[in-house]
Length: 262
Image (cartoon, rainbow, N blue to C red):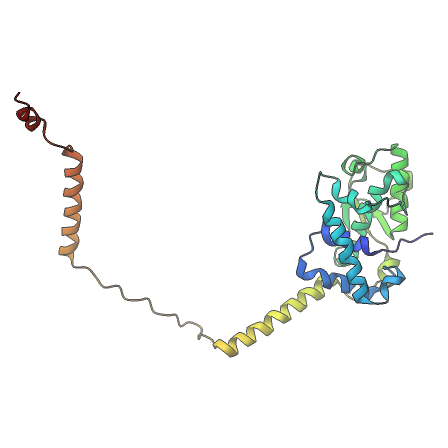
């Protein structure tokens, strides 16, 4: 039975659609490169720099296609006349989506499964074919991508009997998990980040020193204002505001009439 081997376009699509931070992109590439041929195509496993350049080239191509609607992201994985490898051509978007899901399970080994409802995928992925054909292609993806399906109670679910309108637990097969080398990627990255922060903390303490715990900088003393000055200023503001409200602007009306001889 054919087992899908990922290429540079698949890795680039994962980096884009799962919003991998830019400073983490090379770490993701290094991790999948270290796994090697059980996941990656053999020509990509010879030299990391060539592999990285190839992934970035595909990533730039994917970004150039932009975002147009709710299904353009997955559809853009197959720009340039790509042919479906696992599914029938009319279900190529299902193939692209399931490859992303499988890569996510590979990168996050601590994630036991993902919940998917295949019944609504034809509409969300823009797949226009007979539903029976879609169900056959779901089975092809599960088998080719080393996946297994279980119901919400964790019992094996046979998709060859039909796709249910309910959530299924989709996970990597136990055989494929055994083939993957190394520990969980995100756990190792988290440990690296903690080690780096500890290193920065130690360097900062050496350069700037530390403030003993419990000792805080005293608050600056604010000079007090005499009470007489406060009362005077308040009174001046009150009189000023009262005068400005009660006294009209301009000359009094009696003065104007006197000047006019009235």
